[in-house]
Length: 570
Image 1 (tube, rainbow, N blue to C red):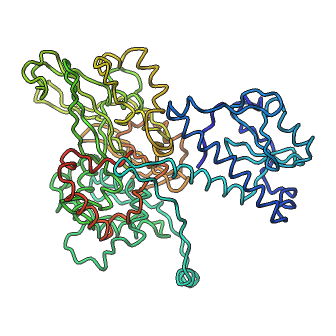
Image 2 (image 1 turned 90 degrees about the vertical axis):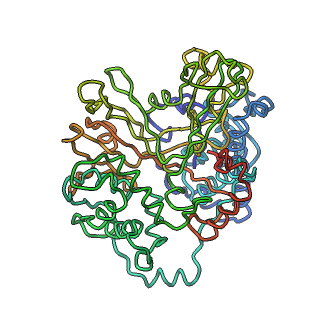
């Protein structure tokens, strides 16, 4: 976990923008090894290191909130007294100096001190090596310190408790013994799927689910064992079988015949040998997995599907006369985005802006509960994301009904550019809350320069660290051709490597080829970079989590009627 930089490194080190500013080898340094041989000196330096990094991480959180930001004092160089955007701190005293004017290195040489730290990145500088160095214990301490600061500053809207501290898994004696006697076999997911008769729509969805890190961890951790399950026509059993087949050393393609049959039995809309829609198949599979997974209850679902994909949209209708807002939460597994009307390429960010942009309603389309029939001005409606799910999936509306003869369906081939990572904070309900004092801003400001200027500061209007809104791309579904004669292909990421899947064929590829593929993108899948979890909450799908969810919903029926029971932000 890294702390965001406040300025471009090139402004500090006078190096080209496409470099990291470190021109040497970040290998082990013999000078810090010698110093760390003294336990007292090591403890003192690590204490100073932790304090410097913690100060910077806490400052990043305080800078988000305007009242705290006004009280923050800007750090100054110990020599020139200039304000520093990126202070360097000596690890052997309390001196902080600037890097660009070499006052920091001047201090190290004059005082005979050997090491300092860049508070923004945690990089350690050695004056003897005249370079930045790597030391494993300091690198670990940096990550743990930033994580601890994030946990201390993250609160949940549901119960206002702090984020639970991270606890690494420490194997017990029996775990170590089991690992030592276990047979290690190669594990991969680079395996194609046989086309069982126009089933490319199913294959691309299955590849996206197989490469989903949360589903992978769930099924490979034996959370649903098909050998112990007694349910009939269980889709989760078929998914467990698929994961066991895909994550093996066998390079031969696998035919998901039993999973296809189970899908036919549970979802009539995607049955038969005709070509079907991949998005419809995706939703049908999630519903079938939900129905056959542990934790599915009517009071509150803690199954793996809702845990991974479950998000909440918010539809807000605001009266044009009295500005009274009416908010309605809507549960969702994915977000369907419309494409622009222009002939040029569209972008995912542009689609999200249009999705969350206010729109005018007709005078008779909405009756304000406060004004009643007296409301004569048109109301406005706006969509936003109330709760961000761990897995964020987007579908682009490429098929539309034409108003011509017989109402045929046509495909929209507008290309869409997608990023490898995206920050979803600007599209959340918290970030897009309109000022109560100015009802007109809800609609008229969307196209004004004042609104565009506000977007630059929108990251200051959401709770929690930035990492909780960052998502990384891990799968893409492409569709070429027409509706009835088209073909689906898939790009998926396995660890840090990208592969292209075309039914039984698969080949390695680069991220550039994924983002620049000329075949129109139909669906994209992103995974949250930092997963938040409820304080003290059990694992999703366990019996205790189901009992807790049920009891919590039954204890607050009035709140749940308005969706408050789902408001774990983001």
